[in-house]
Length: 231
Image 1 (cartoon, rainbow, N blue to C red):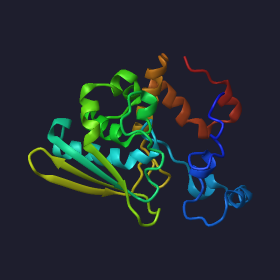
Image 2: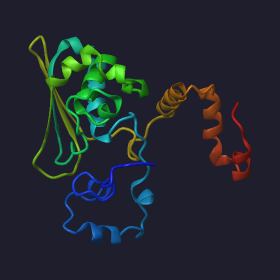
Image 3: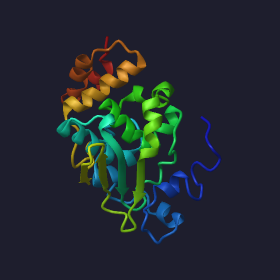
Image 4: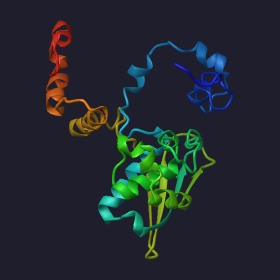
């Protein structure tokens, strides 16, 4: 594997700095020294499942826009501009205001907003380069304005203000992260992700067959699970 030389310990964008506690006064060295202390993170926080295949910093905004799209019947053509306000530090990973590739789009609030409004979904295929470069998407990117609040870093939130072409304004604040340990995805939502992954990978596995195998693991001995084969 290859990566930038400062990917792990870079001063501003490295993994350790990005995932350290924003309000901690201790140095990274002190924080690293505390790793492994009980309770373990999985026990304390539970497991989150990413609902959308792009940076977590966009997810509350996407949920909000998809909700509004469904409730009000909005399309991209109905929207003049969108303002997104997040908690302090909530936009740090979103480096690309004008993405032109799928990789850049995974770290772009502007793309997340445009794709959600245009397509009514954000799937793996959303990040094909040609999908990112669609004229409707590129023309809308400058109409999205993300800003950070200067208050505390927690609780995390997204406040979305949608200015419509008919003069109306719709505003909504979202704190709940769908797919988190507190608000897990439903089985149907999980299987929707599975189907997206299988389709993207060109695998000839039926989602229902996969579900029958996986959802039954808790009641089977490890030996049986390992011996099982999917067609």
